[in-house]
Image 1 (cartoon, rainbow, N blue to C red):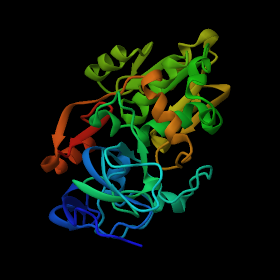
Image 2 (image 1 turned 180 degrees about the vertical axis):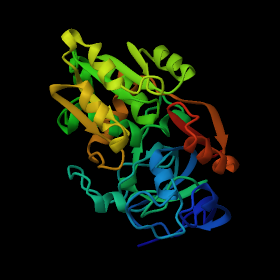
Image 3 (image 1 turned 180 degrees about the horizontal axis):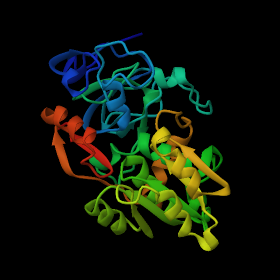
Image 4 (image 1 turned 90 degrees about the vertical axis):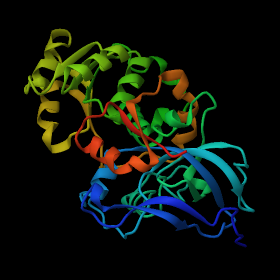
Length: 337
């Protein structure tokens, strides 16, 4: 049986069309639904933006969108109230959101799951209070701040799958500690997926080559531990250069490709004959069952990283523009409270 939540409406941002950041509209009284038995009421404290949010706002996500919709799949907050059948969470728990909803633990995500995900088929994290189904939430590590936790699930899981695939994720996260010893990994750019992949690969023992577009971003990548850095704007043949940095020019073992059609030709020039080019972005999504183990292991494997500039809730349009102009490093974070 459904019941009234302690909060009936919330300030929120909604996407009313697909013309980019200009389609975002602030709503002071966004109605919340009744709390169903499997639902959880959350006070959201931070959120982050992925390129997915830009693609949806620009109508380039490839899946139809029903507006208005509250954007963003990635948020962190505190549980205020739980439905009668919720077993894994209680008031006071700190949680992060997870993109896919109502998904069986071991079922791979389909395009239908992605279409129904937070910020597209279901209302997302860019609001002060939200009612989520329990399957959309994961307990966050106590060692992380809400800002840090809000950056993890989408980009972190994508990076994990690109490097290790689903098999290792079903084992203990710490099994990744030596999984890439002696391997060369190429990560593209300095967005959320690439920075997460950089840190995962380093923690797993790989030699990491990173590409980026500017010297300031190169310095940040170096600080995080990248062994080699290539400016792809001044070095358009970065794939060949990356290959030359490997023993006997054999090529890198894994390329984490975030650019797709614009970068895959260079990725193929960089990779070794039996290597892997992991195409990320809008091509798929990780499995639900991987979330808890990866969340628990993030503080063991790597630090979190987000841009130096933190946007307020009221500055959401500016945050979208900042991301679209590629002025960010790693994740763009929004303080909700």
